[in-house]
Image (cartoon, rainbow, N blue to C red; front, side):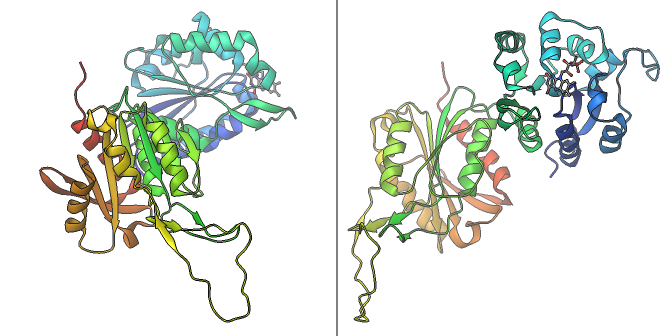
Length: 406
Ligand SMILES: Cc1cc2nc3c(=O)[nH]c(=O)nc-3n(C[C@H](O)[C@H](O)[C@H](O)COP(=O)(O)O)c2cc1C
């Protein structure tokens, strides 16, 4: 994992219990290839030691604007100029209030104020008690720092150190790491609304059993994450899978192909890109038994009858939005052989501009894959790589094919 190679992050800690999570965050950033300079307020040092943060970042921690280690004695200038991004995690209510006022009586607020706003993004991960979070002063301050150019990353919900439950927990280290990685991705899909289907469908026979397939949903979830990183608004329509929702993505969970069709028709009504990665069942049982189908002792297994499901991709691709060019449709084909021939034929049959072929048994459940892109000009292979890396390449391929606005 070297997604952050070459990136220099100033990780600012302010006074809150969530400082304990910042140790893990620092570790993740370093593991991701970034260099990390930790800056702590005096209050932050009450919660976690500078020794821990120095050991994890591999650099001495800064806390004072009077730090004479800097030859020019201006750590606020030097540290903010070196940074590719400043991440405040945790950001206390008090610190956010100070940012609003442009206060600068200690190093961390001083370097935030001194940062070149156009070049060095400021990411804020608030952490506080739920009452502090919902207080109008805090909400007003958050709106103001966002209006002043900072990115407020939101908070989690749940049990708090004070014993109360609600909004205000700092996001988990892995979620913040994901946000930092996203920050550096090119915003190729800014202004687009992308709908992605992912995972298998489940076609119930009775309340106990059903027919499904080996799709894990990993490719579709990676596409949703990559599209969001690229600046799109993303709706992810997922069959039954056990995967965490990518940050900032709206997720709709469902089971059957018919439910997926209905959700997709509705979601694509306002979308500009549709990526159909879901492995949708071609057929569903003709009847659904309200009770479990039991053995009757005759030794004769039940005879199952199937009916064909409506083709989701084809339905959307033949709809008014796709036909008018307002919705760009991308299909996926999971084959077991003759990928080029099957994928080429499928693209033509579905009438879509871009089809992505892959070999089912080599992708289902795997973290990596290889893809075959098929469009009107021919085929191109994206060699084996992580699904996230392939998803980012696919996003770039989609962006390059979208009609230019204006
Ligand atoms: C035990 C304890 C826990 C605290 N937790 C938080 C917190 O999670 N969020 C917050 O905004 N303030 C919290 N505070 C209050 C801040 O530490 C206080 O406002 C401090 O002045 C913040 O300083 P700083 O912004 O310079 O780091 C806590 C205080 C104490 C004593």
